[in-house]
Image 1 (cartoon, rainbow, N blue to C red):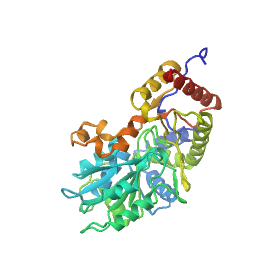
Image 2 (cartoon, rainbow, N blue to C red):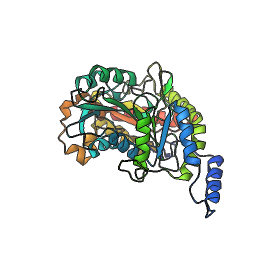
Image 3 (cartoon, rainbow, N blue to C red):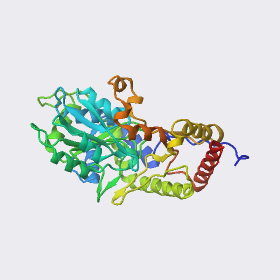
Image 4 (tube, rainbow, N blue to C red):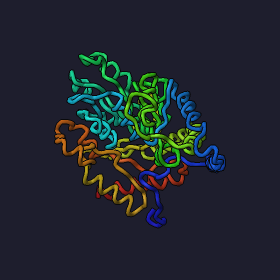
Amino acid sequence: MMSEVKRNYPGLPPLGGWYTEEEIDTVVACMRDSMDWRKGFGGPEIAEFEAAFADYCGVKHAIAVNSCGTGLDISMMCLDLEPGDEVISPAITFKATHQAILGQGGKLVLCEIDPATMNLDPADVEKRMTDRTRAILAVHNNGLSADMDALQAIVEAHPHPKYGPAKVIGDAARACGAGYKGTRAGKAGWMNIFSFQTSKNMTTLGEGGMITTDDDEVARRARSIRSFGAGELHWGTNYRMIRLQGAIGLVQLRRLDEMNDLRRNRAHRMSELLSGIDELTLPTEPEGYHHIYYGYTLMVPEDWATDKRQQLMDWLQNERGVGTVVMNCPTYKQDKLIASLGFDPTDTPVSELTGERLFCLSLHPLMTDDDLEYITASMREGIAVVKG
């Protein structure tokens, strides 16, 4: 290893999947067709992409938007939150999840994650339910679905006095193509919101998102919000996807299972090569779930939390060119606005400690066996260095 030239593996690869000549040809054809001044950049591609995505997820409606972030905003708007209304969400996620709650005036209630899955812990969620709980904004973290059935059972057991059972919503930004008990992520729940940002497992020219739902009223409301009210008695603005993204989305969606299957293969090979290292807890896939490994999430021991974890991450990057990334620490450590709300780390001690132990190792579906052997050999060497 010491004699090898240092390589370059980004901690979070900037392109999560890959494009083929079909995507390139599709964009060029769509652009050429749009040069007709009688037609422009209007066309059927977005509606066709929505129909295909709805069919893929097994839902009645898919609503294309310009990002997962705006889709999350729409999900909170559909709740019509009132002052004091609470939304429960896991402490560990990307800050956009919680910014959507705050943006619509909701009270953010943080819950614990289960370190085995990195998803919210249903038992802890139930402890935090009150008569002000309007929704649970779950996260299908790093490619593994949350336990949506357990969450639905909880909200039905603790109905809101005015609105009935709280809504179960899935932040599916990192879970496009993930499976849950015989269905795909996007089916279970009141609505789910996907991301097609450049690092995701499929991408629509670097940005984009999709809302899925079986609720006709939610679909109507979401469509009105994304396009200046769309003739409805609702506020709206421009959250629309563009024609080229819809055209690319159709191709990427057709190829999604291929890309995810290869990503899973690479993740499983990574686990084989890292097995037996006492200092690492490897990712798990519960029975009945289909993990698509947007992030290959590892954990170091408790006595390695923060300092030794950082030493290991720094050594891998500086000495071997192997990138890692923390996805994620609790959001009150990511965002000044969330931090200003005064969350106490002792309110979610499991998440606090887990956030100091977890990190994701560089992974891409196009990595070769040689790439994986280099990365995992570097990991073993780095752990030996940190151990001294």
